[in-house]
Length: 320
Ligand code: BTN
Image 1 (tube, helix red, strand yellow):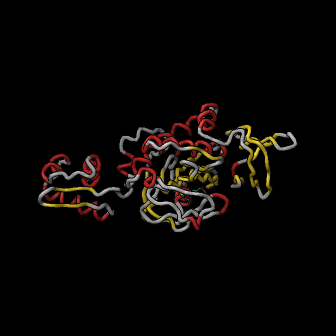
Image 2 (cartoon, rainbow, N blue to C red):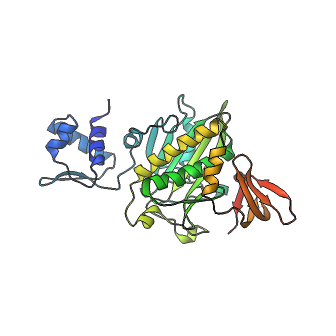
Image 3 (tube, helix red, strand yellow):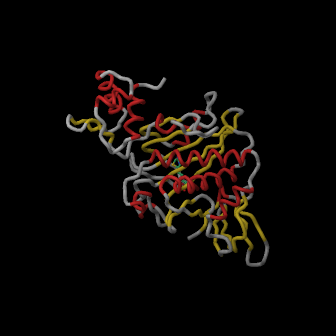
């Protein structure tokens, strides 16, 4: 049975930006007037901004604070998002997800934070984001077989599709893990594989610039955020849910070794095919024409001398 606060939050969220009369809200949540007051206090303590006026009733101010009940509700996934936890402040959601692997039934856990003190980007970079603005999320998969390369591809594709589902903004993919809108980076994926005792943990870390972009002094490529693109503050919960649904599907395909559709969908969104690129791979500069993106072996390049080689995602970055 969901708590009174969770029931009230769901009702307010479903009518967000509108005011609901106290009596109507209490009745819909099966609460007494006092019970409603207590639930609203709980929600404020959880950090939700609630406006109460005698004339208009109760209103949830948007964008709302991340909330596990709202994210889990009727999510409809099989594995990803079986349980969700939201934190105000952590070092890195990837680390929290890895720590959680000590517990039983942690597969599919989603960890979100309003702020990270030591958010990590790929290749040892920092991932900075102001409190309460963006999506900072990690998905824990306890799995002996999921290939890291395929999960990286699946993560990027899920973010691109989820953003499109939730906001209608067309997203492109840049190998290995950048999600872009009009050539500007809006999200990145960091997949880490670590052992916790005998368990192999695959952690899919996702950072989406929802309501704020990093300052240009902190990034080496143009960046944007979803709110700047839609010209309105963005409800992160809708983006999170859409991404989790897409990720659930792609992880299932990857887990069954059905990589054909993943490959096809990824390549359709990638403008790099046939382009000449320079890639820094494990400290070496490689130049060539992009032939393909292989979900198991990485970027497939034809070098200037005609030889074909694969570059794995884990240690590579495409040079601007
Ligand atoms: C990139 O360099 O593009 C990948 C960025 C990944 C950032 C996310 S934010 C949530 C998760 N926790 C982290 O510390 N990093 C990832």
